[in-house]
Length: 537
Image (cartoon, rainbow, N blue to C red; front, side):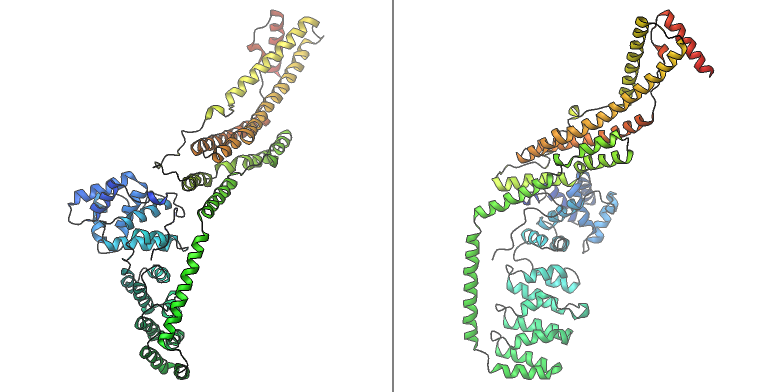
């Protein structure tokens, strides 16, 4: 019987199933690292190679060095000689998962090491996806090691998952179930898988009895129900039923007497087997009907639904959210806290790291959905980088240049008006009033420019950049989508700088010395007198 279907993706690991194996170079490195017959310098160089490659390659080598087993001290010695720091790994959790797949699936490694990696895979995912992956990586009929592992005190959870697996060989499941029955579990707990094996109609009669007896010897109370199941099942041989009743007699004589009386009412073994055979055939017909209902169209619809759900998760922005309107109001009110919150609401969502993972998952699901069998490189969808040229920019130097230009323009306009209409009676007072007026006007213009820059960033993200990102994702142009995403994050960084400029503009005065300009002699003398008077005051 085929094992569970291999998952296309594993949680926290974005690598598709067909890529979850080491390349030839790393496979040789892992095998050589574990081979004690090779010279130390060669094994050290293989560990160094994995360290240089990093990621899953380093994760696989690190697991091999640290995992318990007869190889542990030898590999620890190699690690110390290589000076590779396996105690402070430089890889992600996803790399660790992929590294476990490398070790479990590399056939030249010691079987016990592969078994340890498979156990870690199963234990890391309580929803059985790790078990499905491990079943694919190890030989389908090579799981009898689990019984010994349980007796040694490890792989207990993996053994329970395996014992429940109806696609696994029943004889091996029974052996593993017996090991679980013998395993000391606090509180008299009996794993569900053990109870299922005792009641399994296809199990050998002596195996079912042995499991029930093992539990009863360890904990009579926990074994009561299991012994009753054996004693009351007509598929169990009569002699084995009587052995179960005799064991019941030791702790529960009343229950044993009840089971003895039941024996005369049980159907014959042949009749019970005929009923069981009919039930199995009926289950097979129902399974065949279920598979017929699982048509390619149904699979396609499910993939389409998953793709659409991912696209919906990317639509984190909505033009109807009116972020721009709130930002306008807070800028007009010079509300520092309000503007700061607006910046967070508008720009922070595009920096969510889950967006990158969603795009890569979309790419994988798209290949599955549309049958694209291209051998994609791991970095196929890496963008070239942000398109910084499309992002509005503004610097402090540009603001100061703008303030100088507007001040010069205002002073020039004033000079032309004086030349046309003449001076007031108090020339110094007129210059004083003009200087104050121009300073206020320039400050307002600079603040307006800083505010407009923030508005332009919000509008560029809301109306241009993010719609282009969503459109690229919908059109399955994932490299383009990631480039738009990188640009959006560059824009978010610019928004942080723009907020600082705006805050400075709300409190800073851009004073300007009109004597830095060229003036006719008459104006120059008046301005000189005004400046000396101002300095004196």
